[in-house]
Length: 435
Image 1 (cartoon, rainbow, N blue to C red):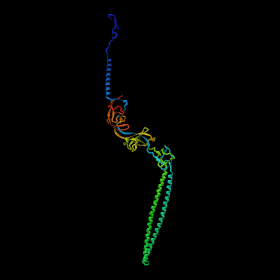
Image 2: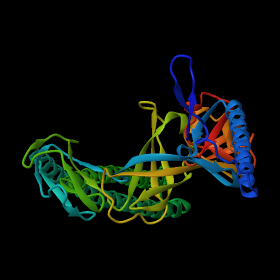
Image 3: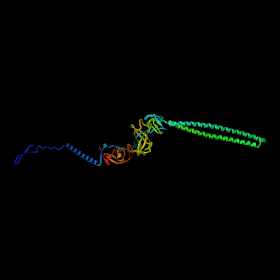
Image 4: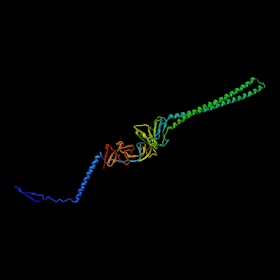
């Protein structure tokens, strides 16, 4: 750069020129043109994407990340409507033994002891019952002696009646012979007419006496048979009483009605008990059932014999409904399930298990996995996946099980649906799904 002198009227001033700032501008080459062209294309594409994104966001009511959603497909297959249940294991047979008579009890077992059917569990000492049995046995012996005495007396009187009848028969024979002699004598006019008539009268009286003796003998036999039958009935009645008292004495040895284990002792050893007092319980562990408090709303859907499953130790065991209570308590109906096959080993009284009851089976149905969305819209709507959007679609559902929902209308096989909770969508018509 050089300085040019500037002259002024007063003082001479020197200024710099622009010669040092000047440079030669070269014309752009072909490579630079390509860079500029690509930059322009990128700017145009970015603008188009921004415009598309803006229109997309303007279309959707809200957006949600795909990671927050659970999506399932509509399938076709067999639908089994079931009911999830939870209950406790109880003994199907759990009898309680009672005191058959008042007395003092001696308990021979402890809770948890294994017992067999017929084993003596407790013994009751009842002096009153022993005394009643002794009196009944003594009265039975007395009645048997009286019955035997009556039979002997009857045979004796029958023998006397037979003797009198035989004598009357002899009198008839004698009278017949006297009559024949009188008739012969009358024929020769040896006796008078009066003697002949007397012989005839004597025969008639002898025959009449013989007939009365025979009638008396028959009547006595009938009366004697009746008396002996009465005595026999009295003896038989007393024998029954003795047998009953003997049975009650045998029942004082309280025996186990089933094989199992001793449950709770309800009385103390050597305690005085009244008749029919509860002594202890016996649990039959070979027949256990699952007792379920079923909600009242499902009471009409279940019936005895309906198939079910019981889950235990990670396995499922087939079961059947064995009993349904006719009463409703606390809005539940007590229902019992028994194992269809042999029950698994290791079950314990009051153990809590889960399972399910099969209520209905549909051979060919549209199925959708059950999720929180079913409770969000009450099964009346679902969000169907359409590209990057979830479109709220009115649907009609049928029966629902613990894991699946039957779809009647609104969705088709293969449709993808959001099955997670949709409460946060606030019934929006379209939801944008972002990655």
